[in-house]
Image (spheres, helix red, strand yellow):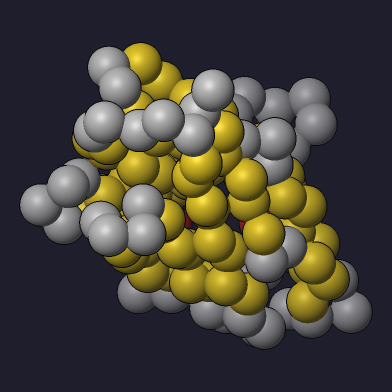
Length: 115
């Protein structure tokens, strides 16, 4: 059974930084795109960033220059470095990955941005 587990969320002041990590486990034969979404209650889930196995990166326009996504193809992890966080970016951040020819989701990690 493949599982994704996010870590690194928490409370940060406006302008602060957090580093989220998504760890995979289970019987994995291949991983395609990995990425991060965020979900605010009552809103649609929003794609924040993706990274392909060859490190082709997509970033939501509003986070470019502040967020960085990277992956470790040996450890099968994906990391989202978030800098200069703003209060409106508070959300549950979810990891998403294409593993063994299907999509998997993590349960999410809460990011709170408040002074």
